[in-house]
Length: 120
Image (cartoon, rainbow, N blue to C red; front, side):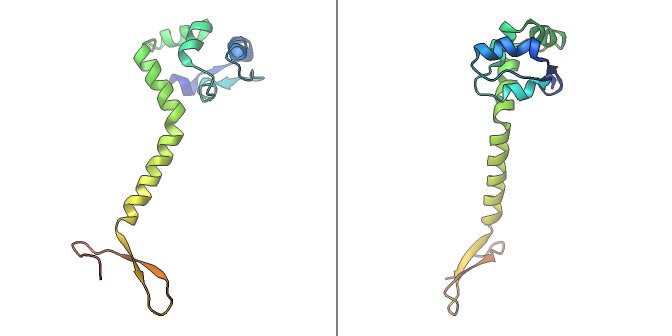
């Protein structure tokens, strides 16, 4: 994906970053890293930073739907991955049940065997 591979230098984007009320960069930075900032919009950046528009045109990626989906995916991929991991843990826990032990007055997790119901 171009957003992960393309880097920009301060002279190319700092004016935009200042107008977007976010911290200017001091060194070459991946475009994807800039897009993680909540104040930064790829569509606005394309409008205000001609070089980015040119790079996207060269890669035949200057399509509003592609741009919008790329930005959403990039900004939320960490959150989506975290939710996926939580769902995986929940799925694993579905195969366990709690049983109170009489001697320790504690609950232990036991695997729930296929086709069996919870013990009473």
